[in-house]
Length: 282
Image (tube, rainbow, N blue to C red; front, side):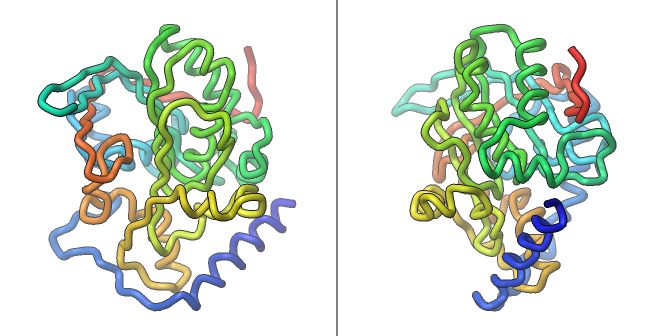
């Protein structure tokens, strides 16, 4: 099954090559993806208090869950304050931000492999959502406001978390921001869900909803052109690097709303990183 899924994904990626050519639009003064993520990870390690004002900031925070940056786990929880401008005044809310990284087959004993992709894509129970639920219930006070953000598989399982009865019954899910992720659990999610997808990223179409309601899959996707080409390496960059670029996603606020005004101040001294093991112990 795993090999079959890999072949399916490769076929989908290759099929997009007929859609047109493009040139990677990484400006000369724009930092590389590795530099951007490293800066965010350094802020977390030093316990800084940082204010985010656009979606690319959120995407960088999601990235620290991948094993090539650190190996503690894909689930990151940080306490913060959400600030939204409404007409001529501001409203603020205390929130807990839960970021979730995506597929990572190199991570040891983490439920972020291809099998989890398949289960989540078909909206089935899996170890990743079980570990997310456990991390939230054991570490976030009941009744708190939650914001989920995830990349790829992480964005799909973030939607599962926003649909989870235990989480919805004990917490207030305000927003879910998904980077390069298809629709999951569309009818049962709590709060506002925003899906962001580069025009060359095909992963946002790889879920059951594409076969049951392709119009909904496409209509709910906010797309921006990162200037990537159609070679396999460029398509990979569109999925893995576009979302950290402010030049592409800077018009979207921290909730994924285009031209929105919501900002998020995070206290990284509160940040905790949790594993998502394949073998779960109580």
